[in-house]
Image (cartoon, rainbow, N blue to C red):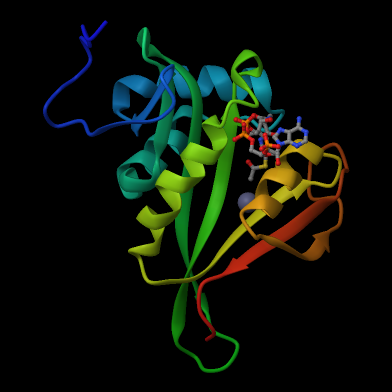
Length: 179
Ligand code: ACO
Ligand code: ZN
């Protein structure tokens, strides 16, 4: 109770997802735990430097979840990147927030952890003056599609054979402003 050894003054902490969990910004030391969750829960794996570059470039929206009684063990994460793309209306570059990956370890699911990860990270990417949030999700991934729909993401199109095993992806968008 209250002996939070990980609490460093520089690391912001949140504890608004019930009594069991906390969420905070990812640090370099957390990446190993993030990769562990990713490799267990998702078929899409990335090399270490990929995570590191997301952390270096977009640290404010790289959020991890852990249990309060074991704050070193990562049980969930979310990471975003900001992409500059040409607007269709004029030649100006606009920012899109791309949800690169989110996952929660199986035994901690359905407890609001992803909801908290999205609630925390979406305002952080909003600071980058984005026009929309975008993501791809397997067409068979009912839990994740449901989660995104709950946050008002809409299916925009289907990306055929998006995944290495040939599965299609839904390309989902949540608009922030009209451009
Ligand atoms: N069945 C149906 N709906 C679900 C399910 C499920 N098994 N799980 C979550 N949802 C939906 C529900 O609407 C739920 O709200 P409710 O509990 O009030 O009904 C809502 O999502 C929020 O649930 P959370 O508890 O916040 O979600 P959780 O922490 O369990 O995480 C996640 C959801 C990330 C999809 C989890 O199941 C997971 O890690 N899956 C494996 C990894 C994965 O598929 N990640 C997404 C890949 S796509 C991408 O990363 C861009
Ligand atoms: Zn993507």
